[in-house]
Image (cartoon, rainbow, N blue to C red; front, side, top):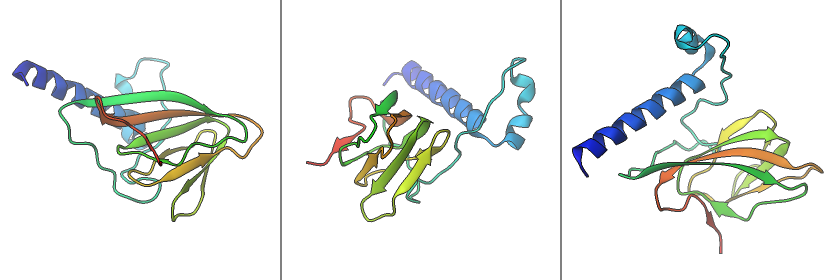
Amino acid sequence: MTKTFRRSRVRTLSILASAGFFFLAPGSLRAEESAALPKGFSTVPLLKGSKTADGETLAYPRTDKPEIVSVVGTLAAGGRTALHQHPVPVFVYVMEGELQVQTEGKEVRSYKTGEAFLESVGRWHQAFNKTDKPVKLLVVFVGEEGKPTTQAKQ
């Protein structure tokens, strides 16, 4: 890896970390930065945490090829995902609807519009939409270039 590429990667990661901290920081922390915001721009904290929804400590992948993947997914009314797990940290924000998540050996968790959570890492789980309306989710994976973000149970 060249020095220029390494410096560029470190700079990019620093910018992403700073932006993430700013947007996820509580209001009292953001107040100090308000002078840096353009007039008319405001933020609403979604989530700040270092543990997954199951209470496990969050750990970022150690890699020379970091990659952020973000998707907007829709789970149909009455639908469910396959039983799956993630080898990387995953941020989920419920844009519309209501979702239930069942991790093997854990209690069912419910999330509704406007709620966010850090998904389980390395644990089998499944999401359900038990309503008559679709659920729309913003999902952000913190992974590694060329590696899967999700693995289905065979």
